[in-house]
Length: 297
Image: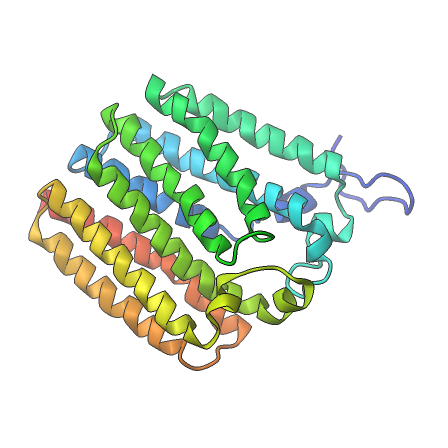
C-alpha cells in the first residue's frame, strides 16, 4: 500500500507517490524528450514523412517508461555517491526516503511496461530490445570506468533510433546508423554541458566525466561533437534524398549550437549549465520540424 506519511525512524521506509515521482524525475521530463526526439527523427526519416500514429504512440510511451527505468537504475548505482553531491543528496534513494528493494520493484514495473510495448512491434525490433535494457544498466557503471561516460549515454539514447527504424522498415539501413551516430555525438555535447554543474563534486568523489576530461577545452570539444552531429544528420537526409528545407534547418541549428559552444569559453554557473542543457529539447524539436518539412513542403 502506498502511503503519503513519513516513515518511523529505524523501520523500512514507506512508499509514497511523492517519492516515486521524484525518483523517476516526474517533475522534469527533459531526459524523456532527449530520448524521444531521436526516435521520432528515425520514424519520420524511415517513413519519408509522417509515420503511422500507432508507432508514434508506442515510442512516446516507450521513451517515458525507459527513461523512468533508466534514472532509477542510475540512482541505484549512484546512491552512495549522490549523498556527497550537493545537487543529488536529496534524491529519494540517497536520502533513505526509499529503499533499494522498493526501487528495484519500481524499475521492474517500468521494464515490464516497456516489454509490453515492445511486443506490439515486429520480430526484429523485439530481438533488438534487450540491448536497450543492457545499455541503460551500463551507463551508471561507465562513470566509474571511462572518462567520457556521456558516450555511453548517447549509445543508450541512440539505440532508440535503431529500434524505431526497424519498427518502421523491418530492416536496418545506412540512414539509421547515421542517426544513431548523430545521437551519440549530440548526447556527448549536451551531457557534457550538464556535467558542468557537478565538476567540483565529481572531482572530489572520483566520478569521471567529460567536463573534467576536457577542462578548459570543453567549449571546443562540445563544438566539435555538435558539428559531427550536424554532418551525420545531413548525411542521413542525403541518403534518403530529403528536400532542401531540411538542410536550411540544419544550418540554423548549427549556428545556434556553435553559439552555445562559444558561451562555454568562459566559466558558467550551475544554473546556466542546466539552462543550456535544457535548451537542447528545442534543438531536437527543430531537427524534427526540419525533417517533416523536408518531406512535406
